[in-house]
Length: 281
Ligand code: SF4
Image 1: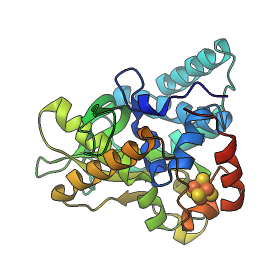
Image 2: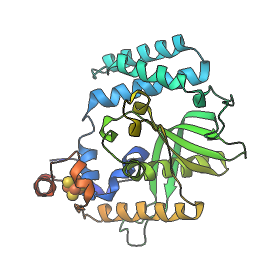
Image 3: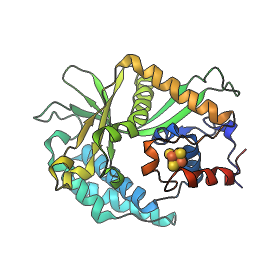
Image 4: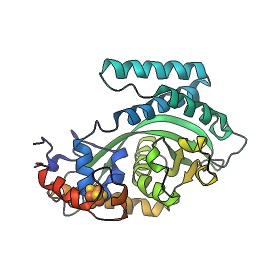
């Protein structure tokens, strides 16, 4: 049995994480993810090492400082009894990231200004979304997270970019990738806009693994999310509607092409069994 209470999802005490919003397309997948947060610990912590290394390098321009920061992060994992991640891999990605001149340190304009310059890194954000009209709890939805980067373009506009290291995207198309992360990046942008009191737009995804790719079609690193500002409200509404279904007690599996790559099962026939065994209130 689980102590997960669906009516408490997204309340002030149980805020949703921006990084899990992309899973909301299927309510069952979202709930199972909440109940198994330690999954893929090594991959997740290797990704964290990469983020820690990049953050330190962006702030200090020092690879030695990035290396120290990654060692300290591993120490924290060790003390918490967690998997320490693969530092060799994370270090390799940090070095490749640094080599790309578009990733200049904080505040510095790269020669290629298309993606802009980094002006904020690892920024905590909090966002409140009004509940859907049919949400039985009538409570606002609290969402929190830490965005990777805000970049500024030459026209003074601000954009959120999120770095990803997961290998599950090796076999996905650019559209799959953008679809998976759109809600997360939009939530970061909306949270950053509330926090900074100026418009921050969804920029896109930086796929760190692409730096080491051999195949030409895998070498693209920056994937832009192209969505008009006017559509952002609709995306936030759709998040509120998905959350309302869950808060109202409906954990529906949504069978789509995403099922083929779902971490829950090898297919919908098995996830329906998961649904019977969930034991959530
Ligand atoms: S297999 Fe499909 S329906 Fe089942 S949990 Fe995954 S995404 Fe949802």
